[in-house]
Length: 105
Image 1 (cartoon, rainbow, N blue to C red):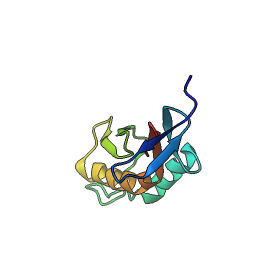
Image 2 (cartoon, helix red, strand yellow):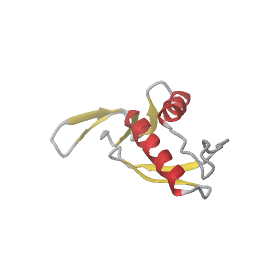
Image 3 (cartoon, rainbow, N blue to C red):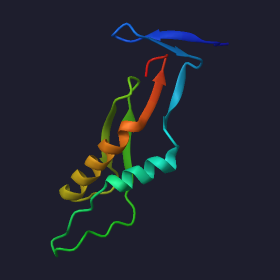
């Protein structure tokens, strides 16, 4: 049974932990992350000059054990302008994501 431990980062700083791995979380919870993401999203205009209609888009990403977020992609095919807007909004919102693995976060 694992009780606690201390991990050390590349900078020599210690990171205490009580679990081998902790799920990624966002300060305030998942719904706050969604709201922050939506607030950062500027939906581009389509070829008709009107804002694109976006009901829902599924995204995928990986939170690495060092906390970096990689592999952002949309599950559906979207045009490059919308994909870039989603990526920018995600990068702005993902700043609040936290993950801890073997004490390192």
